[in-house]
Amino acid sequence: MALMTGQAYIESLRELELEVYFMGQKITRVTEEPMFQPHIHTAAMTYELANDPEYREIMTATSNLTGETVNRFTHIHQSIDDLVKKVRMMRLLGQKTGTCFQRCVGLDALNAIYVTTFDMDRDRGTDYHEKFKNFLAHVQSKDLMSAGAMTDPRGDRSLRPSKQNSPDAYLHIKERTNEGIIVSGAKAHITGAINSHEIVVLPTRAMGADDADYAVSFAVPVNTEGVKYIFSRQTNDTRRLDSPLDSGNPKYAIVGGEAVIVFKDVFVPWERVFMAGEHEYAGQIVETFAGYHRSNYGGCKVGLADVVIGASDWVADAHGVGRASHIVDKLTEMISMAETCWSCALACSYEGAKTPSGAYNINPMLANVTKLNITRMVYEWMRIAQDIAGGKIITLPSEMDLTQPELREVLNECFRGREGVDVDDIFKMLRLIENMSVGAGLPEAMHGAGSPAAQKIMIARRSGIEQKRALAETIARIRPDKYFEKIVGLPETDYWKNVAARIAEQHHG
Ligand code: SF4
Ligand code: FE
Image (cartoon, rainbow, N blue to C red; front, side, top):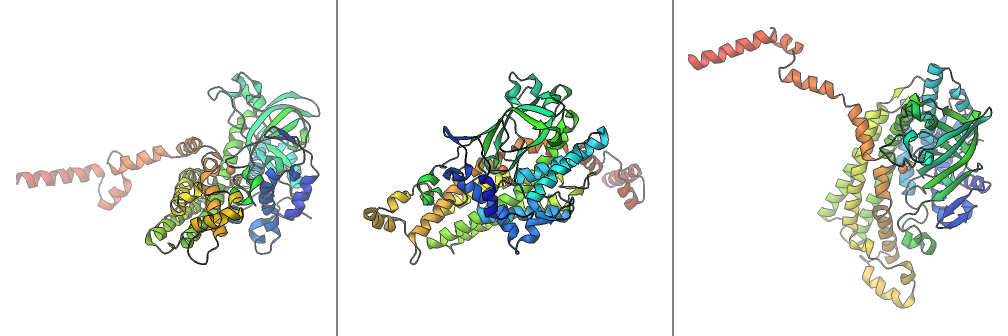
């Protein structure tokens, strides 16, 4: 059966023994570790919703490989409709979890590899695409979660991979054997790494001929020998260990449970290698991946905006100012910004196109604009949420004080709102806004899927600036304007000569 439930997903992780480090501790059973639970619950939502008939249309798709129904997070987009449903799925999951549900990085990696390996095989006579399709069929039939691993540590950013002092600044091929490749290095900031089944590795940038050993793409199971994980810290993360209330979103946390993945002499069999030295295609795979992932941000972050807009309205109402004109104005501003980003996500999906592989790609210009808007607007709507919620979001006492009988009465008095609203609920909602607007979610919106400068490079490259110059030159009468000539019925030079003569006559006559 291709579709796992949320619980079946969690069960499937129990069988995997990983080498994970967090705050100096070694953890081998990720499902038993309280720090990781909310991130696991969030990823489980990508499974659970696929089993709900209400969302089946959005959450599942028909595999182009097998004709079976698969979770959309393992699907290769076969149409514009698939691209649109993908961003609808992102918004839906953002609404249901209020955080990053992690599984999209793997989805985008699968699609980017599918598209690029097709072109490589066609141009170079390699057999990566067929091998990749076999891997994909495995992922789809078992409904696996793949962690897309792209970002290398990168050392001195001014030097190319092969010129770095340390070879491990970029993940690279150390050795090639008849059976496969041996790789070393690391991937940083990898979303959902410790609670996935597979790691799908992509190169991090365009590569030159000297960097061929760094142009590498492959997949390994998460528990492969030589792979270890160092889990990231986030603002207020350990609150979840001592107080569900204080942590703000104790069920699903915030951002995607990122980790550094270290590869030490890891063996990858050839059937799981999808690029090994074809440096000319590294740029394509990176750009394709980045385009897909940037389009997502107009879905997932807008889902989060829906939650924080709801929370802001709730708090204003609990404080008795829900109908105040300045509150309505602020909420409307938030909604308008969120829907602007949503429009971008829909636009880059509807403007997508079929690639030679048959898979559909988003419109890259519009996807980069989508993400660039997100890097600004998430800060703006979270700023308004903080404005509406008030200073309490950073001064609330903890749940530990709230549960002290001798403090409870005075705290109730301090923090109660209008008649009939439970003060505990006010705490819950304020903590949710704190969690979403003060913590790691903001820089994640900035840098996830690439920093703003990366989007601007792509936008500038596709800007068609020469065409825009030509437009201006035509209007400014520097270039000929064939339509104007048709409209006035004369060559343009003759027309302007006539105009000049008429003006001269007026002045002298
Ligand atoms: Fe998915 Fe958004 Fe998280 Fe990226 S940031 S993995 S698109 S939820
Ligand atoms: Fe992200």
